[in-house]
Length: 314
Image (tube, rainbow, N blue to C red; front, top):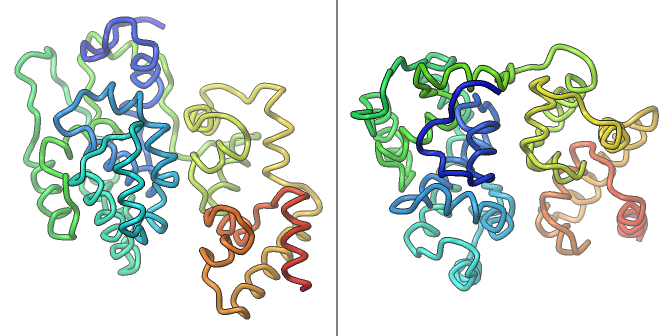
């Protein structure tokens, strides 16, 4: 890969380099993933980004995959649990902000505003390419980030100041910042298109969107990282032979109709009981996100399916 990395990439830190090469500046269109990134940028306030990168997986685990539906229902017990977790950023203000921001996100969605559409509308639906030639004197915020920051605050979001929002917009590809000397390096990574055109990556993308799953959720099901899902869907790299069986399992085959009817029966059973997805998950001793995916048509494991069938038939 030719060219140079941006100077903010720390020395030979492999984690930082991978983030720069595969994530930073890549257009992101998934609403939940965008919200997660904004939350992580809020947690970064006053800290180095590498600190967040090193804690990101622990943060995801502690915050239930940054699922706004779950976080919005956090109680004082959840807050205490997070404050006692040494693997995350234990800031009372930042944790409270994340919980409040989850509720603000859901309020937007309930009002009919998709977070991704909302964000991208501020840049006309496509990345705005900056043309800076040197790293000295670069802005830390712009009129655009200031305007978006003010609007987010009006909607109830916190830790979304103009500087945080500008860094966020750069990272998710809304206003990608690449110096001329770094352009060949960035171009060499083949930024993914919004929608893959054909083949297994296209089927993976459309199935994921059909089920309204995030890259993080699909990655966990297939056993890879979200960055790999992003590369597959962007046609950067084809899936390796060892991953094809798991992808085919996710896509399904002739018995998807059976899985579909199963998901419908599960949803009917839950509604007849008057249960929420959270209540059903507690009854099954599983994650609420698993129930949500099953009701969308994702097949549970055989052992879990037997347990669910036992609940339905009881």
